[in-house]
Length: 365
Image (cartoon, rainbow, N blue to C red):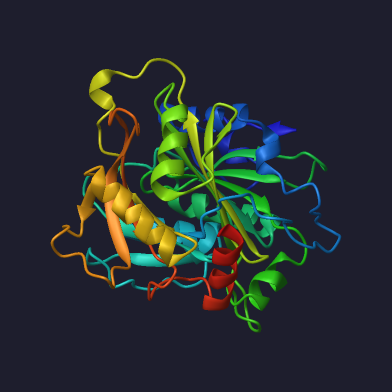
């Protein structure tokens, strides 16, 4: 059963909470439609996972997996609203200040990854959506109802009840400040213990409801998949595999972390003027070994896409570089304008314990 967003007339009687009259933008509804047409199966837990049976892991990593999505930086128009969404609707652990490039940024952990919220006067929503796992999706549903009642803004865009009419399986949520879209699914039983054993959650005490970031989706122009697949393979040594309607980059860290960066081709034609348009936000990706990091830096430098640091300042202890332009390797034509922060697993802020990172490097060698 799919529960569509309630009409304005129905909002005050919706079963999730006591709603008030609200409106949903065409952009937000377009994002939901895009997600649902991708297939509900993507939003459900792996076939070997279960709500009621102990779960024993993801299985072997995909070949040429990168290490982990370190963080996603999101522009937000209202830090207070966005903070409440992460803390209350998603149930994230208390935020931390990253001490980053922009004053006022705050961080919310999602397992080994982090969402960095950055204040922006003209904030734009992430061009895609995020797929996350929570410990208790029913608690998330209740919290979302309470939050949108207090804010008088729509938070739950869609509910999917696939097993029982009275229990939600997937939530499609809208961050109320800027419109970032999140797909929320219940984590398999025992996954929180696996995360804690790996050091990504506290072993004891109150644990957050938000457990992990599973997938980052970025919308791309039609026909860009082949070029992006080649870009990630050649420049970053990634898996870069084709998928239905787009392509994927895989991540793996130990037994508890499996992630994907999914590029989904948008329907219709993309205007030439929009191909070079800068995408809001940024991605921080960790490579599985320092050797692969060095190789990636040299390749990106040769292609003249590195934006930081300048080649004259790059030393032997380089642990991070940045680029914005994802290009067709053969021609140099621009495919995507999105800031990437590429880091070595030896970077001081790498969230993966050194022994896990070292084992992943050996597997990928």
